[in-house]
Every structure is written in structure tokens, then in C-alpha cells.
Length: 427
Image (cartoon, rainbow, N blue to C red):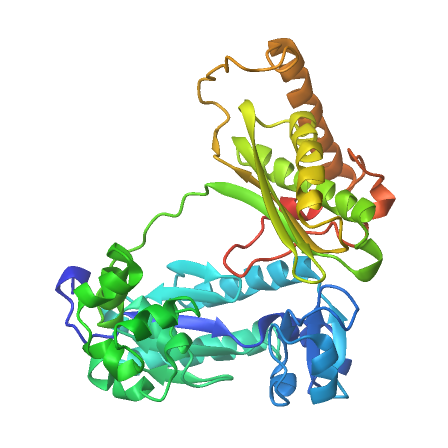
């Protein structure tokens, strides 16, 4: 059956959500952690938050975002493990390869989620459930006994994701349009993907305070809540429609880091900012892009915050121009937070364009920036630094800091919505 002519309640999508993924990988790697409450952290300090928690830790109320000091009160026997993001990417690839032994993956939604668009022979209930069971058995046998998943099967990808949340851990749920909204009527609005804490009061202002009210609201009402087409898309997905896959084009590249206590004085925090900048710049060059502006974000220990943006005279991709811009932004940002101790820093490269695009020269460029030969030398040297680090290891050569200063924080981190390439672990 052609997808365009599929019945509204036909089971077209299977959505797989790995359970307590980072913590499960750590338990798989270290048998001594199996069956125990585990929290994965960025740094070994009680002031940080859990990046992930095992199923055993969740039973005590410890979850992603729980401060470790509080987590230890909830669960005194909690085991802390420092995150190893390269292993999580490695296991992601192993999971994807195992799933594709059974059926092709249509979309990788995040490091721990993927969706399968079922073909007509697998859209019957029995065939879809059989595929789900085979995937579950394959993960346990060929990836690891700790690597479990919850699977949802539904008419569209969105409802399949909703279904995957109905039974955790290691669940399998079928969700048809006929089951809606009653099957999830006990949920809070914010349990639905796409409704966050900022959207909840906007819905409430329109009289939508429950799942039933959300289901009954028309697309125009949701468009009012979202402020445009996003509300209509949400309505269509919730009611089983297929809005297709919208291409996501990267408009910025950035990295941020929560600092351990010994790195929170302004001079040490600047070193972290410089490392985040060179990491983002290396990734930008690898993707064949250049940027026209930079944003520096600073968060203080007492929630002071500053976001300072600077534009470049012309798009660039070399470390030297970008580091000069960061050094201009740093004192301005620190003045705004009164040179406090820094809890988190982030650097984002914005207004990305292809590095091969014709260059538009600025009337206001400084003399050295307008020198084409100097610009080419800086770009070649920046690329040479990238090659050295890829060949000999991350931070074999650095700019703006000593390589030994960044060992504790320079590694690549995973945002759940984006899976790093293997090269990033050397950048």
C-alpha cells in the first residue's frame, strides 16, 4: 500500500528509545555496576547534575538534571561514573547496526532514539510486534545484556514516540488513533514531546490544561498558542498526520561546558572558553563552513548571566581571527557579571555560510583582515593544527592555552539531539 493511501490507523512507524542509555552503557562496560544505582556525571562534584541515571537510581527519584548532592541524599548508595562520550557514540553505532540487521532505520532522532518506517508487509499488528521482539532480542544478544529499549508502534512517527514512553523500561506498546486521547489522558501536558515549560502557560491561557482539552482544540487554536505554523504541525502529528521529515540546516556551531570548582575563577574560565572556541572552529572547518559572528555566554555561580555577541568584518574560519574576537568579548561579558566565579561558559559561531561561497569584502575591515595573503596563511595554519590533532590526538597542538590545562574538560560531549562524528573526539 502506498504511504499516501495508508489507512489512518495503519501501524506505519516503529520508534525505539534506549533505556537509561548512558548509564546502561556504563553498566555494560563495568559488570560491577550492574543492578546498582548509577549516575553519569560530567565532573566528580556534588554541585553538578546527573547527565543520566540508571533504572535503579530512578527508583530512588534520581533522574537527569538532579543535583548530585541531592541525589546522594535520595540514594546514599549511588555510584558516580564520569561520562565517556566516545563510548556512547560507539555503542550508538553498534545499536544502529544491530537494528538494521532486522529492518532499515529511517531516521536517527537522537543518540538514544531511532525510527523505522515500516513497509506494507510489516504494518500488520503481528508482523510489527514480531519485528520489535526480534530487535529487542538482537540488542541483548549482540550489543549487550544491559542495552534494553522501549518500543512504540503507531500510525505516525510522533505517536510511535509517544507509545515508546508508555511502558518503561524494556516496554512494547501499540498506540492507535482510536486509543487517543484516553490512553494518555493521565499525562501532564509537558510529558508530550514538543510541549515544554514555556509552552504550558501559553496553552493554559487558552483554556488548555489537560490532554483531553489539547486533543479537542482545533489547529487554529494551537497555531495561536505556538504563534504560527508550528501549532498546526503539532495538531497534525498528534492526530496521526504525517508532516514528513523537515530538513534541518545548521545555522550555528557551538560548545559549552559546566566548570568544575577549580576552573571557576575568571582566568581559568577564559581558558575553557578558548578551548570551546577552537573546538567549534575545528568542527566548522571540517564541515566546510565559515562564520560571520560569535556569541560568548557566561553563567555565574549565583545565576549571573551575560550573552555577548560580536560580528566579524567579513566571514572567516581561522582560529586567529576568532580568538581575537573572543578576547574582545570576554572582558565585556565579565563586566556584565561583575567578574564573578563562572559556573558555565559557551561559545557559538553564528551566521554560517559555505566556505566556498564568493567572498564579499567589508568596507570596514582592518588592514590585516583585508590582506588576502595573511588570511590564507591563517586558514592554512588553522587547518594544519586540525590535521595534527587528528593524527596525534586531541590538543597535541593548541592556541590560547597550554594543552595540559584542558585535559579535564576538552573532550567532545553529546547533545541528545546531535550525535558527534568520530573526528570530533580529536578536535
